[in-house]
Length: 357
Image (cartoon, rainbow, N blue to C red; front, side, top):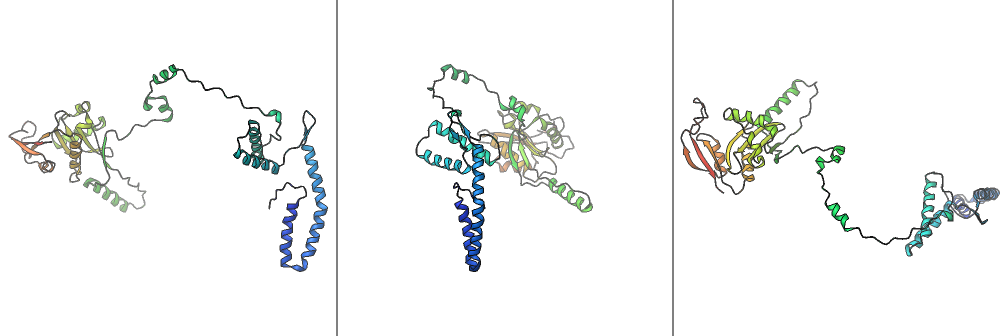
């Protein structure tokens, strides 16, 4: 046990050993007096040597100032006692600058001793500097604020800081909605293929399937090629919707994307006309409510406007449009004759539907 005391008579150390002696005496009264006397004789012979060694150490560390006064360094206990006393007294009254500087140096000295850092063995009064006199506050010139307000800031993605720290544009540009729950027939088929392959090749390492949601976004340039291929398979060749990128695609289009695959698209001709030109879903992704979700978000993005479209007379999409409130206003004979092949099973006649707001 470590004992730190300021008394040169080592009374605390004697008290400590006396407690141990008394405890041993209570356990064995026959040997208590003999052990106590042996201990006292031993301490009586060692204590003068300890005190003499302490005085020699203090004399070697002592210094003489300019006026001949002998200065002795403070012991660890004395430093801790001074800091404790100063902390208590400072709480009652504001310390002077000199007292505050002495207290800071004593605290620094104690920390250096704890971390075995050499230096700052003593505190000299002539090394203390008084605090500078407080200058009166100066009001800034009025032109400074005008100059600061006139500075033009740069957006972070275009700034030099973005080059140092990095900038990653959002991958979900034009995001409308995210669907984690829908499982299409194509997704179920791919899961069965992976499962059968793992059964057939149990020794080969299988990469885990990473779940990916179906994201509904507005039309982007990276979607054009897949959208054109999808519309060519569902409708006819030669469809080009690249002009929608110049006319508010965030209001004129909703694209369903699974990973990097375009699985559905619904498009308006323009936000002013609000005419649905195409609605298509990739094969294997039907009967998954993808068309319903795309149509719902497209209607939501264009509130307070009537939306019109034409649909073939035998197209099952008529049921979908009726659920959203579209009503037939006109029957047009031969509407699709210029677009469909004569051998096509789709009807050449069309209904003109309108969703009134």
